[in-house]
Every structure is written in structure tokens, then in C-alpha cells.
Length: 118
Ligand SMILES: [Zn+2]
Image (tube, rainbow, N blue to C red; front, side, top):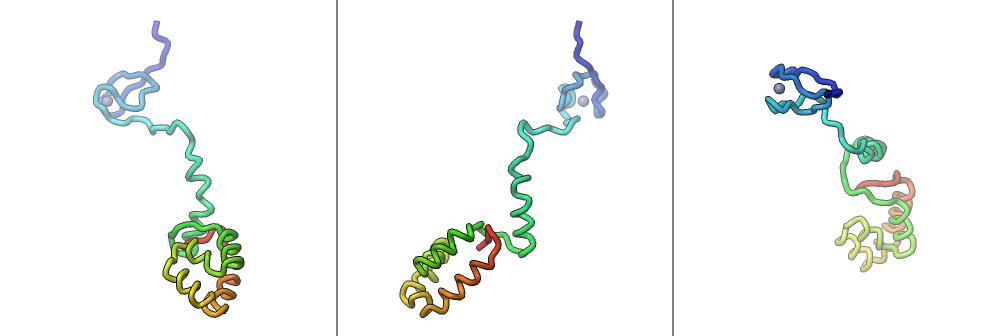
């Protein structure tokens, strides 16, 4: 005795197991395919995603505090951290644009959201 429930395919009308997701006769998808794991990845990224959207720019996420500490203690490391190699080299040779770029960057990094995007 088969105790499993059956249903009719809404496409071809074949009698199939109720837990079928794809009709074995016509091959069409009948039910929503449920992922094995609930989509934790997307849920975790909603806040950072909307954050990126609100600034209207999708870049690489950077940790504000890492950049800020690099900026304060090295004066140029945050530029390399952000992938701005040219600016980093310029900062080394000009000592953080004669200290002005360094101060400006500390202030701007301190006021950035975490993570921020470059
Ligand atoms: Zn079918």
C-alpha cells in the first residue's frame, strides 16, 4: 500500500507524487525549488547592501577601523589597503601630502560608515 500522497501535474495532468518538484512525465517545474539551507547569505548582507545602495556605489567593502588605524599609524597604509597604490606611493614621498592629506583622511575615515566602499 502506497501511503504517499499524489497530485496532478498542472501542465500535463499526470498523477505524480505530491512531493514531486518536477513532473516526471513532462519535465516541467511544478513547485518552488526549496534551497537546502535558507538563504542566510542574502539576509546577512541586506544592511550592507542597502548601505551601498544609499551611497549609490558598489565597491569593495573595507573595514573603517583597519583603514583608520593604518592611516593614523603609517600615514599611507590606508591607501594601499583601499587598493589606491598610486596615491599610497604619493603619500610616502610627500609624507601624506605634507600632513594635510593625512589629517583630511583621518577625519574622512572617522566619519565613514563601517564597512565603507572604495
Ligand atoms: Zn507534467
